[in-house]
Length: 245
Image 1 (cartoon, rainbow, N blue to C red):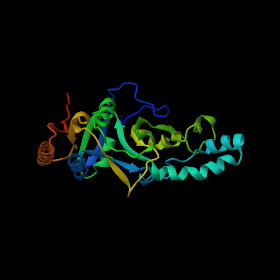
Image 2 (image 1 turned 45 degrees about the vertical axis):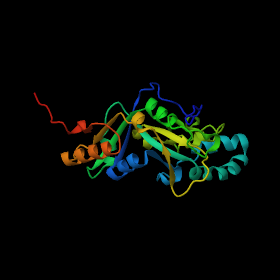
Image 3 (image 1 turned 180 degrees about the horizontal axis):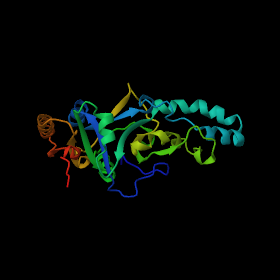
Image 4 (image 1 turned 90 degrees about the horizontal axis):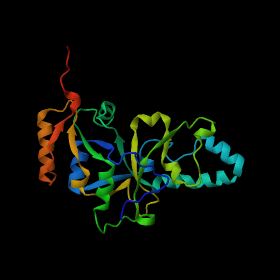
């Protein structure tokens, strides 16, 4: 078993919640060729606050535990380089904002799946070495707090260090992130690792970006079928003509 539930990783209320991964064409081709999802080191995501404490956490835990918190804080930093993540956007519909962020040139691809299918796609790859503590992948929704607040409601509980890795600043709430994670991975080379998945289980729909030409849609569909993924590639529904009455 590769996927495992965990108290820190809160699943969507509906296991059929749609999830999206937006990418450029080369990354889509890599997904097909490798039949794997890329799990990136947390410290390579570009957010310096990933895995860090909030001000409220430091304030209240220092009051309770004194210098012990500062000693523990020195051990938090390695979590960023030894925890690998694969991130998805939760939404029942396409997101114009996500297209803009991940396909700004108009030559992008979105893979649409569900929480349940992501979970099953990992479980259906037998005998794959993962090389992590417990040999499991956890999946859950990211929580968002105000990292500059002193309010106790913005405190990250330290009963489990994984809480640090599943909390981001409120300024990232628009991402509506569902995060798959290999915590405390061993043998991390470079900036991450490819983890095999069952693409037929994972991929529900494929879209090309709103401004993509028809030739790109056709090429993406051809590439998908050439690598054994029989899916009709659709134009983004955001490209439909306006209707006026």
